[in-house]
Amino acid sequence: MGVESLETGLLTGRLDVGLLGDFPEQDAADRAAGDAWVARAEAFVAEHVPDPDALDATRALPDGLIDALRREGFLTAAFAAELGGAALSPYNVLRVVAAASERSVPVGQIIAIQAGVGVGALHPALPEGPLRDMVRDRIKGGALSGFGDTDQAGQNNRLPAMTATLDGEHYVLRGEKLYTGNGPVADLLAVSATIDGGIGVCFVDTASEGFSVESVVEFVGSNGLPNGALGFDGVRVPKEHVLSGAEGQLRLPAMINSIAFLGRVYFTGAPALAVARNCLRWSRSFVNRRMIDGRPLGEYDRVQRMVSRAMADVYAMDSVARWSLIGGGVTDRWLERFVAKNILTRTAWKLADRTVALMGAEGLETAASKRRRGAPVLPAERALRDARGFRMAGNVDFQLDSQVAQLLLAAYYRGERPTPGETAVDASALDLSPRNQVHLDAVAEQTRWFAQSCAEATRTARAELFADEEFLVTSGRIAAELVAASAVLARTAALGTAEAQDLADVHCTAALTRLAGLWRRLSPDGRAEHHKMSRGWLTGSTFEFLTTT
Image (cartoon, rainbow, N blue to C red; front, side, top):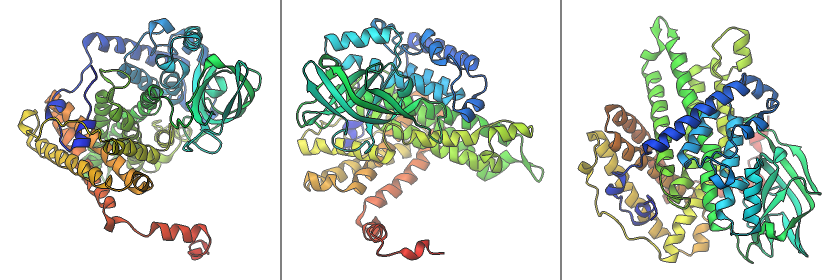
C-alpha cells in the first residue's frame, strides 16, 4: 500500500487534515542505523579532508579519497545487500550526505550521485536478466558511477542529441554528454540516448573504446566534485545493456523518473540542508561576538528577524525532507519528492545570501583572507557559491517548476482527479497554536484556490496551456510553497512544542507573503510587456540606449 500524498489535496482543493495529523517519523531501529552512519561520515570526512578550504581553493580531491569511500562502504551504503550495501533508508541516505557535506560539499555529492542517480540506484528499475546482473556485480565490486543526461544542446530538448544505433549485437553511441557528475572518474555510466525515435538508457563501461573525458568541468561552487564533458565516439554497448525507448517515447521509463526525483533530493537537497545548517551556526558565532556602539548585535530587531528566519528555514527544509522521504517506496509521494529539490535548494540559497548580508564584508571575505588576519574562519562566501550551484544541478529550478505543474495539470486533462478526503479543515484536530491554526486555514484556502486555478486553466487546449510558461512556472512555485507549509504544520502538530510552534509561525508568515506575490503573477493584470521588450532587445531594434555609455 502506498503512502498518501498531498497531491490529492492540490488536485481536489481539499486539504486532508487527517493526512497532516499523521506526520511520518523514523522508527527507533532505523534512526539508530542512520545515527551510526552519520557518525561514520563525519569521522571519515574529518580524517580525509582535514582542510576543506584547501580543497575548495585547489579543486583537487585528496589522494585516495574515492578508494577510501569504496573501502569504507559509502559507495554502496544506500543499496540493497545483494549489491553489497547497507540498505539505508532514503532519509538516512540524506542524513549521511548532509553530514559529509557539512564539512565538504564535493565529498557529500560524490556519495549522493552514486546513491541517487548512479547505476546502482537504477538497479530496482531494471528487468531481470543480463543488464540487472551486470549492474549488481559491478556495483558490488565497488564501481563508481553516474548518469549522463545533458547534451551540448542542453537538457530540456524533447530527445537527446546522443544517438544509439543498433549494429548487430551492439548499439553504437555517438555524441557528447556535458555536466556529468562523477563522470571523469566513473567506472560505469548510464547515459540517455535517442533510440528509434524514443529515449533509451545505455549502460556504458568507461573502459570501452571510443569513450573519452573531453574536459573536466569546473563550477563556481562544489569545487573538487568530479564533473566532465564526456565523448562517445562509436562506443559499442551490448544490446542487452540497453533499455530501449519505444518509438515516440519522450520520457525516461516511469520507474527511472521516480528514482531521479529521489536522486535530486540526495545530490542537491541534502548538501543544501548542510549549507543551511552551517549558515545557521555561523550566524550565531558572528552575532554573538559583534557589538555596535556597545550594544550586542543580537539585540537589534533586524538581526533578530534575520536569525529567526534562518532558524525557521532550516526547520522547514528538514520537515519537507522528512515528509518526502520517511516511509513508503520509490514511487510514493512523487509530488513531495519532486518539489523538495527546489524547496531545499532555493531556501539554502536565500539563507546563504542573508548570512553573507548579516556578516557584511566578512561574509564575502575568503577563508584564506580570514586566516591570514587571524579572524574566525566562517566560509560564508563558499556556502553562497555552493548553494547557487544546487539550484542548477539536476535541471534549472524554473524548469522543474514548469514540469511539476504540467504533471499536475495532466491529471485534469486525463480526467483522473482523485476522490477528495475531508471536505473542510478542522483546525482543532491538530495540536497547533492559535496563530498556526490561522496559517492552516490560509493554506487550506489557497489549496482550494490552486485546484480552482488548475480546473479553470485546463478548459483551454493542452498545447495552448503548456505553452504558457509563466503560468506553469508560477503554478509550480505555488504548489511547492503549499507542500512546504503543509509539511511544516504537520510536523509542528506532531511535535507540539512551543519551539516548533514558533518556527512554524515564522515560516508560514513568510510563505504566505510569498504566495500573495505568486498569485498576483497569475492574474492578467500581473503580466507586464515582457514579450515586446525582450524581442525588441534581442533583435537589436529597440532599447539600445541601455548599453550606451
